[in-house]
Length: 255
Image (cartoon, rainbow, N blue to C red; front, side):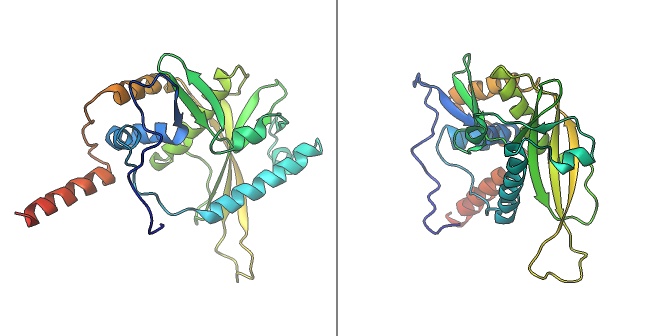
């Protein structure tokens, strides 16, 4: 983290009096579901959580996978991974794909009742024989066990991410398959030596999404933002617990 990091900002803060649409990213929706108090302090009061360290290796895997699938897309060929797993899909050639992949634009939809402009950046898009778009997300990790699903509790963010992207595409008028795919790359540590090369096992994991929760959550977010009261701390939020502990210890030592 930079020594010049300033936790207080003056931009991207929700103002109930502002009639312009307020941009809300997919990750901030996830933050609200994780802890409404942290979300409110971030989007309404302008103090975000301390950022984590960037996962540069994960980003490198994402970049190379996009180049790889783009190669087959540009040559109107199917990817061997899809053929290997017998998936009814091919890389989709859409004129807006580059824009939808960009972190600060992504695919967007204005939810008129709340005036919130929801957006998120997808990794890839495939299309099946029914002309349904398929949301694809790349994941990279290194675990000893084989990864075959995304059903664990800590993977709920992955599932929400997929469902929000599916919802955004549907709200833009596209026919979207309920089944999306995670291209999961697992770095192997059982090789004899490094030799300047990290090898991955690639698993294709289907996930049937359900985006029925998204609209209700967006409405709840709007209700949270327009309220003048800061939400209560979430019991299992480490950030809220840390802030409370610091406040308490400072109070004790200043008396």
